Length: 138
Image (tube, rainbow, N blue to C red; front, side, top):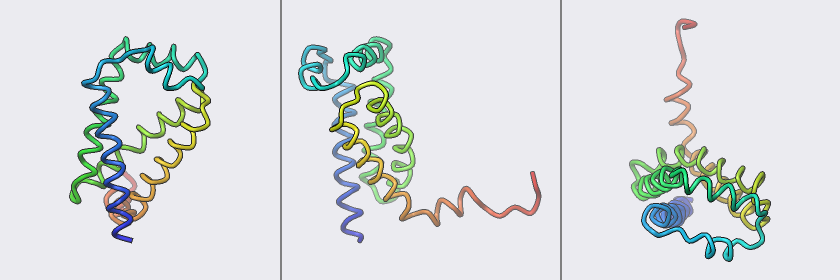
């Protein structure tokens, strides 16, 4: 099971480091992006262009890169996994509501399951940290 965790961490780290670097440092070309995702709803391209023009994708890229780097190290991979949950949920919902592309829906669902797998394996640590017993109500 430990080997599976290492493989999942490594693959997720590679993926999120790459997409983070891509968003932060590589030039965005809308024509290439539209050609690579031709099966998507046209509304998705409008939404993505809006995010790009607003600079929001740099914010997303930074956190993708950060989470990918955190996944590399044993000491920080749980933090990276927890930080990835809202990020992957946003990606998944973007494809549910905007792109409606089946491949991306399946891909993001698998990413979410892999991240949740890493978190569930450490649930006792998170439970101890966030759900401590209290002696008073407040």
